[in-house]
Picture 1 (cartoon, rainbow, N blue to C red):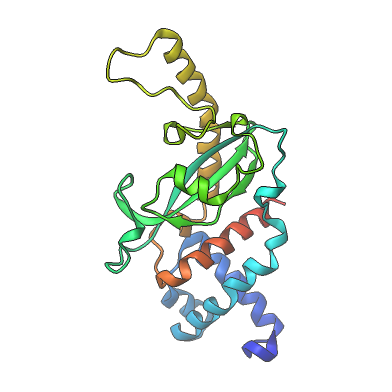
Picture 2 (picture 1 turned 180 degrees about the vertical axis):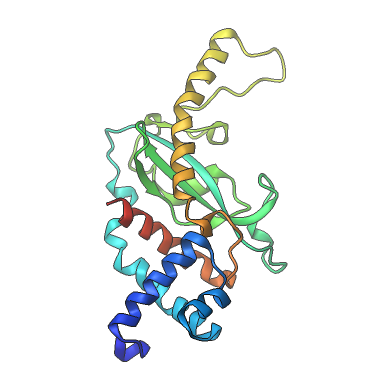
Length: 226
């Protein structure tokens, strides 16, 4: 590591702490530079070099679709990880959220244990598309999965969509109520993941680095929970 970055082992440890600080508090690079007594360009180069390495080193802690148990039931939902609005990247704009970012799909167990997070997809895409792109259901039975109305048509358990006419029947209303009670768990799981401040405030670094940063934070999150 020293021969390729010019940093000592102790400095590399400091860099990892620095990146953790950026991810959890989304601190600006000028502030980090002042904290560590170096220039802002040095901070920028360090983050650019170390961030993808974190994702690689911690990859073994990140569950893949193949690691999910086909006998288990899962709850899934998508969430938008916001970023600046780059005029040259309209594909990041989410009409649902009225802002720009990237969509990740999150699955948890019925008890709320985080089970899986997908690779990020452009924010303009709907949840059903993002889940399909992840291929997570290719080897799993969607009937064992619970989702919101955005997943209607995916063969999983979802609330019943209200028809134009007439209104939902009483049993349909009760069914939707029970499904939404179950879905509350995934909302808590996503909220816990997004305690990483960089995952719920506008991403400041170049858009080309966003996917790598998301992967690194996902890896750090699973590592911290292991």
